[in-house]
Length: 365
Ligand code: PMV
Image (cartoon, rainbow, N blue to C red; front, side, top):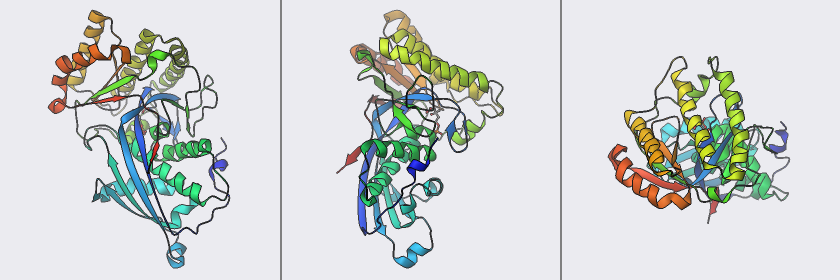
């Protein structure tokens, strides 16, 4: 893969102060990414719905360094999360900046002050790395656009932002555009790449427009297994090879599902993907169970509800206990009633988040 295209040829670093704000969404994978090789190359292609309400808003203030400051070649930034200085988030961002320095040489020309906030509660068990890293990547691309002597197209900006975000957190590569994004090279998806996400380039049936995702917060604690540890568990995993093949096949199948609007097939693939992700964790060494008793209660309730009503409510899971409920707009009313009467009881403090499919990063004035 040609990553040289992302190294800027010449830049004019003479603007002393610049500031950009971006709002970027979280996403929920339908075919999951679990397992990677260096540098953040996925073992299989994945596809996700971009979300809308779960997002991060990040502002980066850039101030040009003095010549003596610039000479030490250090990346210098301050980080504020929800208005407060956040030292414990700094190492992850510092590592991210070091990884992308080759592609963003302007990182050492400016002092940066980063202000970030999430629309969802911090300790909700919802991963903020996808929206967080993609927001930083978009701010950097706005800076690059201002410094570039040649006009950068929106297509290039999105592609490079996804490329950069990926180096911060793999799934963040799918948080730049929407409503469906593929990351990872796959023969059925034209233009797909291991190094950036691309919008799903084919016909999508009406039934998937405005698709809902209600996120039931079953366990708001810190993640039991970090994704870095989790991905590493796929090295030498006894079922890894079959798993990567299965994901590959599921993406083939989803392509026709999206065209035809076959919701039953959609449900079968999406739920199987979620349970396989957890099965991989249960069968790794060391092994983990990330579902909680209430996760299981919710899954059984969904299955009974579907049997009784014929409605197309299904679930997917991240690497945690929270449950994402996916359902079409035209069935939303009945399903929403069911969530409120039957499922809320299984959420921590009755908390859940109503979200739906979204369209990607937005610049904030
Ligand atoms: O982006 P990471 O390294 O946090 O990995 C995310 C992995 C899953 O959320 C479990 C699946 C996915 O494809 O988003």
